[in-house]
Amino acid sequence: MSKNTVFVGMDVHAETIVVAVAEGRGVVRSLGTIPNRPGAVRRLVTRLGARKKVKVCYEAGPTGYALYWQLTELGVHCDVVAPSLVPKKASDRVKTDRRDAERLARSYRSGDLTFVWVPDAEHEALRDLVRARAAAKEDELRAKHRLGKYLLRYGQRAADGVRAWTAAWWQWVRRLQLQHANQNVVLLDHLLEVDQQSQRIARFEQAIDAAIATAPAHLRTVVDALQALRGVAKLTAVTLATEFGCFGRFGRATQAMSYTGLVSCEHSSGPKNRRGAITKSGNAHLRRVLVEAAWHYRHRPKLRKRQKELVGELPTIAAIAWKAQQRLHRRYWQLSAKSKPRAKVVTALARELVGFVWAIGAEAERYNQGRTTRSAA
Image (spheres, helix red, strand yellow):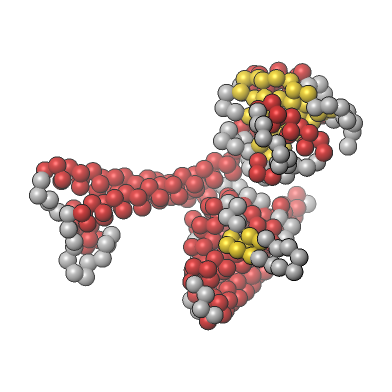
């Protein structure tokens, strides 16, 4: 690497950015604090000199990727750092913004940082839409719990044989009148809250369908290919595609598994091997949908409609999906026969399912690249 490269570390906050610079083998020096505004960032880039020789990094955080996109548009190379993987001395008990920026610049120069994958603005917008739908689903569940517990407090139960949240149950609860007027006011509010959250979910799902219909061809191909897997419908496929981002950035299936946090933690030394629960240090959105999908593999393998459609167009992907059904179904019953708890069995299946998801996603991306090359030729 050129000795003239300027390595810049930024400690980014909502209103301010603390900047430090490392040049050549010299001492890391602080450039002070600037406002977190486009104009101030532009003036800083001008002060740093030739943009081709400047490399900037900052930690991923609540400020998102707006700074990354701005620096990229200005022609400056920028990397977003994984905060939990920044090297830190065990004895370092002093933390300030200036020291954080200097540590970033120093580690950046020495090549000790781990970078995260940064989506483009369109991909980030779709991911926000999918996550907003998941948040609305959680809000709906909480609203239903409040309604159910409110009815329980007053001993209100539907007729025998009527299951909660069915059409018959809703007819009963909407006609229900409690003893006092104030109680009915609260009951009505709980009902309206559930209805509101259900409407939010419906709006988000319509927006996701519209976004996928107008998405780039490569993203649509990945979403369609992932639906060949059992337990993976459109919403799950979109979640996998947006959260993984680019499957090609993982060289092996085990790397994709680590990214989801579904691998077991380990503390081994010498002849002793100790493994514990899953690390949960990866993407929580991926873990949720993968575990939900893994439950479907307790059923006997069955050729799905989407697999039949892909046999002619993408036979390799169809074969991977069928192999996943056979292996994971067999694995489920093998572990169950050993009296393993079902939650642990399904978690183990979810970890293996990641490998098949990665294989299908990577194959779909290679197919898209080949199609683009053929079109260009």
